[in-house]
Amino acid sequence: MIQFNGVTKDYDNLTALRDISFSIEKGEMAFVTGPSGSGKTTLLKLIYFAEKPDKGTISVAGWDAEQLKESSIPYLRRNIGVVFQDFRLLQNKNVFENVAMALRIRGISEKEIKAKVYDTLKAVNLRHKADIYPRRLSGGEQQRVVISRAIVAEPAVVLADEPTGNLDPDTAEGVMKTFKEINAKGTTILIATHNRELYRNSGRKVIRLDMGTLVAEEVG
Amino acid sequence: MTLTPYAFKLALQSMFRERWINLLSVLTIASGLLIISLALFLVYNVDAATKNLPEKFSLILYLDRGIQKERVDAVIGALRKNSAVSAVRYISKDEAMRELKTVLKNSSYVFEGLDENPLPDALELKLKKESVGQESVKRLADDVLKIKGVKEVDYAEKFLSTLNNLRVGMKTIGLILIISLATGIIFVCYSTVKILFYRRNEEIETFKLLGATKWFIRTPFLIEGAVIGTSGGIISLVGIFAFYYVVLLRLSVSMPIFKIILFPAEMFLVLPFVGLFLGVTGAAIALGRLKY
Image (cartoon, rainbow over all chains, first blue to last red; front, side, top):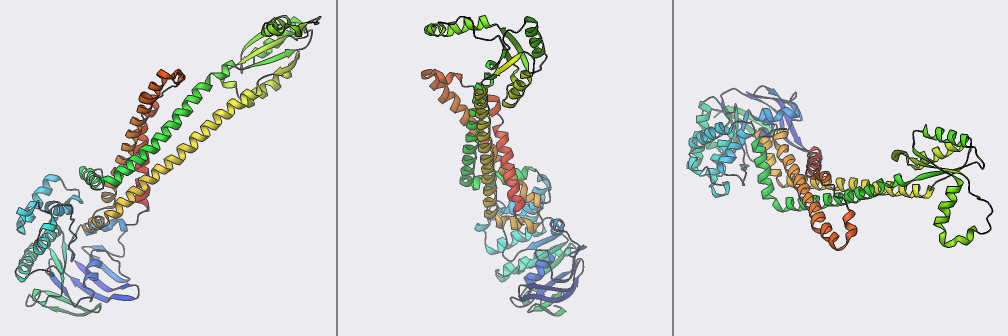
């Protein structure tokens, strides 16, 4: 589902990722870990084509980065749901509208949008907060709205960047439970985190980065 | 372009959120279009006022002294064949003298001592309206001088050049004004859309990351440009009608000179569409130049 072959990414004179190769199979749930500044976020950005690699090849859900035209990027992104580290919630839209946005850009009918958004919000226990604006939600609730937006269109891949970074242990556990449920339905999930508790004894693939280099690929 | 109901909803939400920027743009566009309308109004009236002047224009052909009646008929026949000529009137030297005496009845002493009529026989040519132009009249005058029996041609050369200069001048000023103001209006729409775009940069970035196409992002801005332009057009339309019906018509009561002013109402009904076109053009240029 996700394949990196010798990928290098530079920002001016700084190398963010160097010669990275790994693959994640369809339906797999994996983790990318490493200290702050190790290149986790850059790796995710390369997957959803917010950045282009300077060297190497990337393939995601059958789309090849080298052959991908600029105009095709939106269609590739529709196969990927992203849980952003900074949430990226639209502050002038309520919870329902934030989640619905992922469907509106796909041109889905209003009737279908309503059904899918309420189903997804129910799954993350936020159905009762549909009309609330993001600034009135707690960090954990905002995180769950972002997860809802990432999964509502049932993408093939879900990427999560530090999804439990600002959450208390109980809420973090709830968020991870949601990811496991989504994964159980066949969605490929890649989570970037520096929290070892999330992948310890999970039996999942863990890609360890340090200073932009892949130092280990192991089972957590 | 994806003209979905949601694109209209996004455009309306943005217009409400950024109502002051939008209002300012609408008023600027309305002012520009109103000035264009006033310029057109003036050009239209000058054109209408000068349109009938060519009908009063004529050429006088002075014939050879002692010309025979047959020769005069031949000259008239030749002139009538000319496509620029609408009417030919023969003025005998006696008739010319009678007309002159009528004109100079208060200065009859100028005729004292005249033993014989010094005036020549003449022909007055009226031209078709479309043939009254500086160049075409000069060409005609040269042509008729070649007809045997015609000695001299006289016409109001200065009148023609003044009329020509007035029309060309008014049209040129009108055109310059229209082009510069239309460019200004496009620039206002361009700047407005660019400002609105940058103010929503974060939102747009999120749309892109969620998989929105360029047109999903662009269409609400185009709609916004269209609404701004059309609103400006409607306000200028109201403005020009108010100017005529409230100001000019009231003035004409105390100053009858204003009664001769013509108001081409149907010409101004296109103003909202002109606004729409300029608004969409400005927005399209702005979106085309944005890198995203």
